[in-house]
Image (cartoon, rainbow, N blue to C red; front, side, top):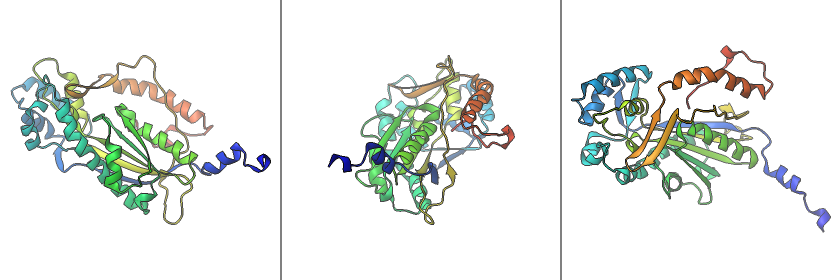
Length: 310
């Protein structure tokens, strides 16, 4: 009897997909509240009741002008901020108030992006086998992944993974995990959803040194993105957009201080090192050379399409 049983290698072979993972659909969503980047410095100092801090405002205008952003979206409104004054006081504990807002709003915004991706994908939501959700805006359990199951009508036994506070590379981490899941589980369809809400750390600058606050508020807005990842697409329903041939990750030594993110009594706050763009420029080529070198590809830099920031 034992001799007729399948070998472990045969079982594993049957579990794996034949091809590499691919992005099958993409969806994005933003809140309705929109502010142009040109208008944003005036908006920010008005809603935080900090218009008397003219020196800070002048610095903020310069930083906002350097970001390259044209428009930004926010879940929070004047009414929301006025009804929660503790959010604007950077010295008052506000963690619970922020959590209550994000816990409701983040899954809803994420679901909006996911629904668009599912519609473009062309298959029912119940065909999703795995869910990966990521956010830097909050941490708790049950988290956004649980709420997404009901909002999207996913199957009860969908395999869920939640990523909290992964920083700027959260989207890349989620995609790396999605690739592994899709290629090692035949027929898997992985929904990846990333959502961010600035209300998790939105506050006034205060009177003292505020450069870290100004930089983070100039860079980040609200939005959600969703992709569906799977291998061995079923034609003609599924139409792959990109193949995910290889993934890699590199840690640059002695850079722990360059970007930090912490969840504390005042919400989510962090620091962005002012020399970060220079650091990225100096280390990007060797990182890319190492990544492409593993694939033994003959390429020219100007033939590549790539993005530094996910």
